[in-house]
Length: 452
Image 1: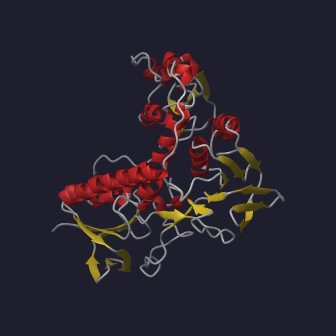
Image 2 (image 1 turned 45 degrees about the vertical axis):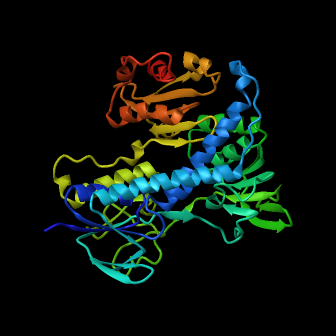
Image 3 (image 1 turned 120 degrees about the horizontal axis):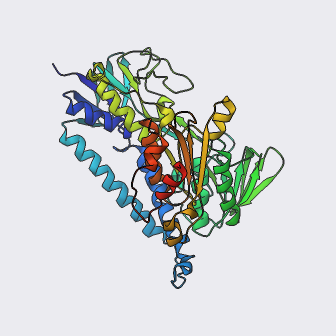
């Protein structure tokens, strides 16, 4: 008899788990209340990267004289941009839906909640459907965090989801939050020509990143005219007519035409009946083990709600591993997810990507490492692109030569980090990179140079 697998949430974790489990023979039911493909993915990640791509094209148009072309004055059309985002979202959602349907996954449009350890209720617009389950996956994602002191109105004070694109182009945007989302918005809106003030609660942007990487980004932000409020925490927001004022705890006031909240997210775990079903939560997150199991062995959690790295790539990998575990494939050779080896990227200008052990963390723990760094300018392709800013940094074990981690700052960093991610995951050595015959002229040659 087929395993009955019920999944609540159709984002990268949920739809990947559904697809793989169905291929392996499970009877899969997927319950999604918003959009198959994931609200955080299709309403956050994809729109932001679409706008960043447009902003990057605008930035490039302003410096094409360096490539022997006449200067072009590109202008943003918000309506065209809005239609372009909608088209991309629709296409991706259709692809996911078609894939699930082709695998025989039953899809229910509604809100899922647990009615017991092995029962899920799917509340649709017209009825409540009771589903029996041998295994359950909670993959309900997250939503933007909104502090009590700053209620967004969708006009002057925006959440991230209200800014893809915004109702009107800000003249001066105050961005609250200097993590990955915050700096991407700064990059995006300065590319569009807006003035930006960034409130940085620590003493560097991207506080969780390598200080050298953060410094490279700060230099670019300052070059663009971004005003940085370092060491300041926003605690009050006032709207007066067509102006906003963000008051910080150190007395400084950031003034602009609009404000954007980019201060993290909270898990979508409320209303799921987790506690009554006996599932332990921690601050709204569902703690999991290396198999993505909650404290109840047949109930899994993945994606943002699991409290692990909030990346679509990680969520998809969790979904695949859960499907294998539900179907018993973990009894054979099975590699657990090593979250410390997950690659991540920030789509600013310069682009930033990293993977594995960071230099600062190694020194803080007293671990001996070998650090090699090569500027992008060492690659002929960077000069051809007229974009030589950035560098490649590789962290390796001085005794064995095994690649432990690395950072890339510069054009196409998000693509190039895949080489280092493979090296870190497969325990390759720096000599493996050096002895690979890479294409010429390419930016990837900087990786081989850094591995020397």
